[in-house]
Length: 272
Image: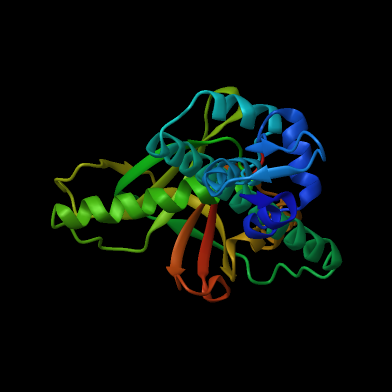
């Protein structure tokens, strides 16, 4: 048996926390001395303590912890629940990190207002192209929402093409369409030869007779900088934009987004 102080030290919690768990019925002492009121714990109780701490650290309330423990889940069932919760927290962390990166990029964009020359914009024709693609729905056109959808699509696309023995014949590209309820359909595509057999969609992207284009260097979380330069050029030159820009990957460094190079292509027309 261990005193509450010793049990707390071995379990790496405070004695105050153990008293709190006792009051809530989460972890009762193995023995309470009737005369002194001292609490004593057994080594077997570390198992329950470990479960309480793990569940609490994963974001469950103490009431939820009690309900889970009372369900008497097996170690395997509990492990599965914890792994699921861990995955959820990792996803939340990734999304929060992406949001923070987006905020930082927006702040830099604000700092550069009034210093965004449009000399790098080129008006040109984009020829029709046959592509193999996969698509999925993103909650919004926000970069923090697009990235987690688009990146896995490209991974699946290249894996399927590789399995089918198909080799892309051009630079990867992404394009977007409005979907239901203000969501966005995200397309991950690569140019391929006609008649490509693979477990993917194959279609012809139409010609863009006139496209305003700009080369964007760096992380795609900084894409707003180039997109707003495009918008300024379109307005200053009396054009109207049509839909969302295509994003053609010219250089991709998986280890360093600062080395990425993309070309944004957006269809434009002259006013009637």
